[in-house]
Amino acid sequence: MDMLKLSHVSKSFGERQIVKDISFSVPESTVFGFIGQNGAGKTTTMKMILGLLHMDGGEITVNETKVRYGQNETNRYIGYLPDVPEFYEFMTPKEYLMLCGSITGLSKADSAKRTEELLEMVGLSEANKRIHGFSRGMKQRLGIAQALLNRPRLLICDEPTSALDPVGRKEILEILSAVKKETTVIFSTHILSDVERICDKIAFLHNGEIALQGTLEEVKGVRGGTGLEIEFCKPEDAEHFQSLYAGGSRENALKLLYEKKTEQDMMEMMRILVENHILVQRMEMLEPNLEDLFMEVVGR
Image 1: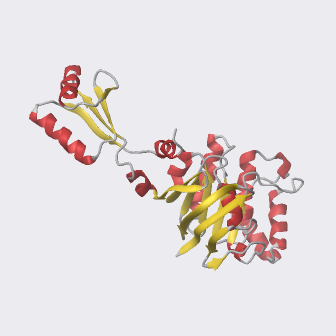
Image 2: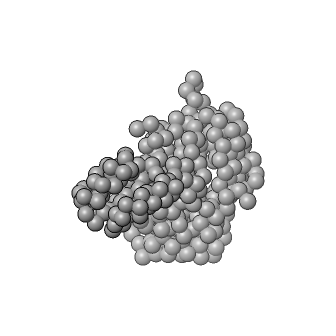
Image 3: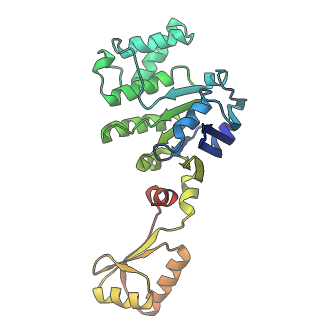
């Protein structure tokens, strides 16, 4: 089942169209990477999913229930982590989550149990100091705990790792990867290495339009191989092969790199190597990466 589905959604502010007829779906128990530059329309889209912005056209459903602007019926299924979460910083994390639990209608016993579980999960069970003394990474982890308090079916995270150091990013990614067993995750970001680490399915948003979407394998398969690298035993063998199969660039005396080659190209190269008795140390099809795809999408 699709936990989230957008069909032909559009949004303008005045004469400026921010989101242009976008459609995508997010299956249950997946981490969905929503990728785009700052200003591409990611946050606007997430606010429409939350019912905080009115759609000019299209339809959004969460857990097969239609989202309606200004109403919170579908938000009972959603946990939300903004890019800069705010807290009552004079509280401890336990006090804060207990307050959130009471606001959302959990009993005191349920709030206490859930608070303990979540603080353990996000690595804050021993953090008894006031929130104002927390680092940015600790606040992001507490924000995730708050967003998961009511066991949402869908967790929306807006740029959760953008301002963190490598250690903080790793911690957040590990948490998001773990929670997908119970909660579908939308992970908005422009940090492509994070996407490759945890996302099952992705969509590139560019100038308000979906430029590319699918599983990681499907998206990478759009280009086929980004390159094919051959490492020879002798420099003269590299020169000889380059004369037989044009187009390669010399990385060093022993290595040749051929851009945008497929498995069929690789088979042809192997035939030439065998027929001309040329030995190689290594022949590798280089996997396409999201950064290359993203740069193509944005035209840079």
